[in-house]
Image: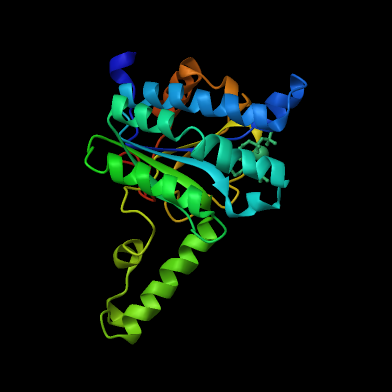
Length: 243
Ligand code: IPE
Ligand code: IPE
Ligand code: MG
């Protein structure tokens, strides 16, 4: 079976259910994020070992600022800034190139500095790419791309008639292949403003497991399910189908 598994190149993960996981244990939501953070390291390690090259993880949306200051501060300051050393050690140990996708506005100088340090220190790794979607929204990304396109058209750098899907995608935050497999944990079956452009032909997988409990064997299940999917991209599966 192992040999027959199809391995996606790019996996998107909408990390969801940290809050419900904590609630079920009478813990604070922040504790849920802490366990989610630990699990993310174990899970990505496993995923890269299975041959995934690109992982995009949705960790904080542009809409997540609606949450309490306590929760937002914990994610920003205790996890990202407070665990900077641990994040860097992890990236170096696993030889992961980390990228951040999202808007810088609303992020503090300390958070931006940590993000910059992570990107700079890991920039030379090539094999494993970890795209961290942080203060990320797909609508924001598309608007930001459009603004840059308009600037380039106004300055004469880009001709409007040359704009096509390929050129448009060069204005997105990252130059990564499209998402092949999108996993959202916790049973929610929605995309919540994640990589709308990049997921146009992704296979969607919605396990009920809450993110801190989503382990290597759950990812194996996702791969088995992905392997069964017939990806047609608008074409047909068999050459000799009748009309
Ligand atoms: C995902 O877990 C992490 C973030 C969105 C920051 P949630 O915090 O959304 O967990 P639930 O959905 O409340 O259980
Ligand atoms: C989506 O999860 C955002 C991230 C995982 C970072 P949410 O928990 O914020 O999404 P909704 O509110 O349930 O759609
Ligand atoms: Mg949620």
